[in-house]
Amino acid sequence: MLSNTDRFWPKASAWVEGKHFENPLGTIGLLGVPLSKGSITHSRCDLAPSAIRSALQKFSTYDFNIPCDLRAVEVVDLGDLDVVDSELVLLMVVLLRFCFRTATIAA
Image (cartoon, rainbow, N blue to C red):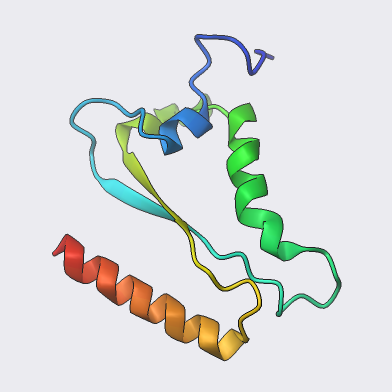
């Protein structure tokens, strides 16, 4: 297994930071939803978006099984919504508004 410090290892974290192939096939968005209210336990689910972004340093963009490299698609990190202590119903409204605004801007 290659080390995550190998300079030839295409890191997923670099992909999220904007390193993709020229002329990407399309664009996708990455949106963090750090919500803690819906959790049954006090597991700090609100920390998940940053934990996932941090873990991406250990993953490659290349899948040997398919073979496919995610860098063929551009990803835009849209950050995290400010919903840590929101109620679930309010979260749905915030998500719908965000998606509508994003779709309107993209169109």
